[in-house]
Length: 458
Image (tube, rainbow, N blue to C red; front, top):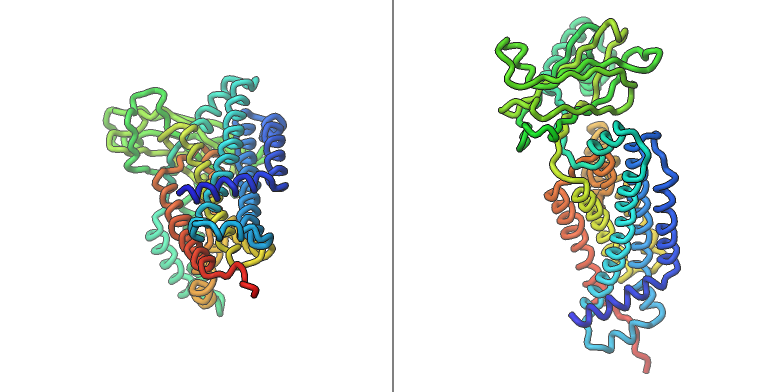
């Protein structure tokens, strides 16, 4: 253990002397405080906090990933090239201990810098909130939607019912001879399912659309500070002149309207004209929730206020499960998982490749990780013939690479006030580091332990 720690200390000191480390530290030290002052977002307090946090964490992640790649690729390559390793191999230290020491030194650097600059962002967020001269309404909105950690339940369509309706429509079109010649069955069904999905989501003027959410469990629904959040976005078939929709919402146990019995839980109303193609939220007290965890939401398209068909999209019910601080800490740990993987990758590759090649491969892997989810989704949507080829060739290779986008992007959790679960974080750590990273590190140790670092000259 003493040998590993000695190598780690030496690696940390070596990394801090690198010019790229100095430049990145200076950039983060200057840009983060400046961004907290300059960035305004959409002009509201919530928009300012969301914009600064998103760009701040994004900048920290990007620059520290670049630094980790550079240090992990340089430290071992430099020792080999400059023959510094000759001073080490003569000591009673095994090569696996040398590799572990190098990795520990890089992770110490990442821990130090990530902790420092994520703390700067956290402190700046609190400072901006405390010193901002914003109306009470904006402060309340920031407290409810940003300084929180929430889980969400999305409204789901009955896919089986949509498929049945699409199949019935397909048969009608086929009997009428209205299906274009040569159009594959899968494409026709895909378009018909899309049409049925649109019918299921749209609300024509004068109509009411209802959604039901089951098994929402909140500990203390009687607490007036416990809230339920309704999140949605309006789409329309004809754009209104002012690009706004007047929404009339009812939230609560709407089953009470049908039964005609005495109301046991309140049903809350929310009416507001809001812009289309923009995400909106409103919240109601949690006592709107029925005892069995049922919550109903109804939307009425008032023909006196709206002259177009309204399509509420991305409808979701959110409820609090934790605090902003603990959620922010988990988001920072997600960034650290990225750094751990890149440190292992760069160090393992440098055991048998030159410095420029290691840098190139690490950057490619990093960029692939930022688009991994998008590429996998694109492969899933390929036609059957081409999809089979890609699924058995490129898709397994992409699985071996890390995934930094989508659900693995920490910014999406902090900006929208969504809870990042500990189980999800542990699963990401296990797959990214303990499986993929460990396999690479063991391969690097195996190669390095068999590598000849020098030749005897007689």
